[in-house]
Image (cartoon, rainbow, N blue to C red; front, side):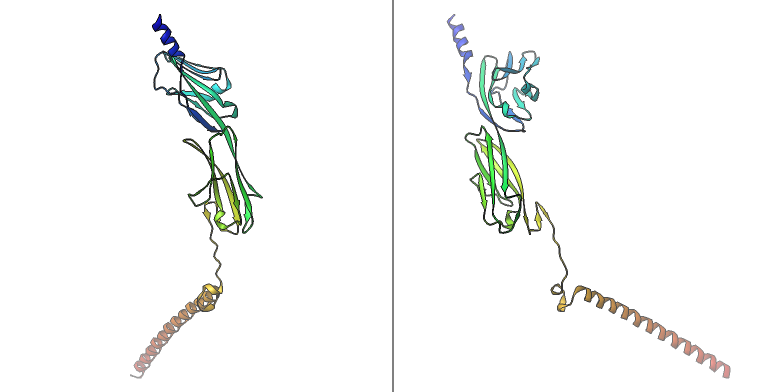
Length: 257
């Protein structure tokens, strides 16, 4: 009897769980805490049954809405299209042991004032708001073309520079989990637009030799080609005239003979 009571008390104990973080709209995997089980495996959200698997491998899905967005893969619970209502306590019961976990759900909102199209030398403010359960999370900004991070959720651009043009990234770090949200900023007057470079070059007088315009050099080159063609034509014509004159002289000498 003492042995039975001992194992009953031991089975009622719950193993230490983990705290998971998820971003609204994304997918998260909750690890049960066991690699295998003998008799049964159950996943609950609060008191709602999500999944139940017996020793024969027969799976029973709960009636809660969350159950239809979830799946059990290798004893772990995978939730798709996370919603704010998914936050709370999750329990994975493997045989006689319960693993209590918790899920914190939040959303990341990025914005820039006055707008995402800025003028050079103006002023702007970038904000990264994290709404929901995000206790212990850190918020940082990463600027375009750099790996340095700003340890704040708000960035002041005073003044706006060409280096501010491009994709900014708000990075939220919660323990070992990292989430991000991007914000595209366009700085007018800069030829680089979000990863695509456009170079426009106009030929002016200073770009060509001797201060002449490119169109003038084109005309000079065309005239030179026409002149060379004219010289070739004159040379050919002269040779033809010489041959004709020589033929006439030979014909005259034959007549006199």
